[in-house]
Length: 196
Ligand code: SAM
Image (tube, rainbow, N blue to C red; front, side):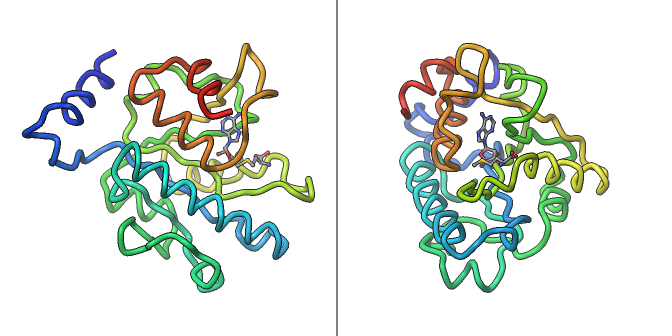
């Protein structure tokens, strides 16, 4: 698995360990912030704090971006925004700035399962979405539609446990940790079981 190997060299090699890799980016997209009730917004903020902790423990906060950052989010926010990339514009603009024209969108309603090949992409998007009211089914796919309209190729991919999304924790921070574990070469099943 070429990407994983290259990545390990960067992380484990003592001299080059200090070098920040250019990719991959882990992006949490807040497009649907305003579709949440206040309690859900609090949960989004809390899950982003936990996502920051995961990225800091396992990867590089400087390669963690939060897009569509707005004033209300900033008030509820618990992430040290100066240590990550806090982007007030659209995800498409962020990607263009970085020269990225294809992304993996982690989406529980995708047809295809996230594969080892997909792990070589330069950016992975997780929806900044919390479901308490149960009225947001299909919203992640809409993030993808917006990106496609902006000319970005979107690979919609799901994470499954024995073929099903049931049993996969859907919190933003858990999805980020499963993704990071897979980027380091862990199998999907093992990664899911490790965060449960
Ligand atoms: N209600 C949303 C929907 O139907 O699109 C799902 C929201 S989920 C609570 C929050 C985010 O976690 C999603 O936007 C997605 O990026 C990610 N996610 C959750 N479960 C996933 C899975 N099984 N596979 C891939 N991504 C997942």
